[in-house]
Length: 241
Image (cartoon, rainbow, N blue to C red; front, top):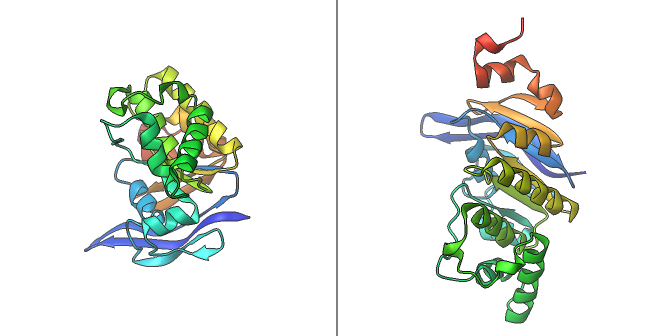
């Protein structure tokens, strides 16, 4: 069963069409990767799903409901959470406080929010830093905190927007393990990522877009051999004859 469906989504900004008739679906428990060159429209597609933009045309369905044009806070309550490329925690507040902010999407009781936050921090191996000020964390831990805050909202679907950017190779490997833990907890994942070895290892399926249009989709191994994908990333000289 599909948890998320994009049906012929178009997104125009004045005379510019950033997303052009994009359709895709994500099954429950799946990790779907969205890749493409810079400016391909990946973040725009995410912003349409997350309620930042209302598509010019087309429909977005989540968990059996048409959510086209729904507001981000309503989507959060419905079970859709996202992270951002640039993480901005409440730097002067503790790690626990930051995650509790997410938990208050599910409860108005402080003790319950704290319990939710502690459970999430433990699952992401960040509980030993719960009393650290968020501004003192490394970039890798700040990204992990961003995921924890989203997970505290108890999502069915998590949108991850380039959360591995700027990480060292060992930190990328650790983050892959984090995402697998999140998926194993029952959360479906929709991820944008430029680190190809990470997205190839993590995704069950990939969708590739260029100039807002889908140019390929399928299993990572098959997509990596698609000439359209090779051209979009590497140039004609890399296409196998």
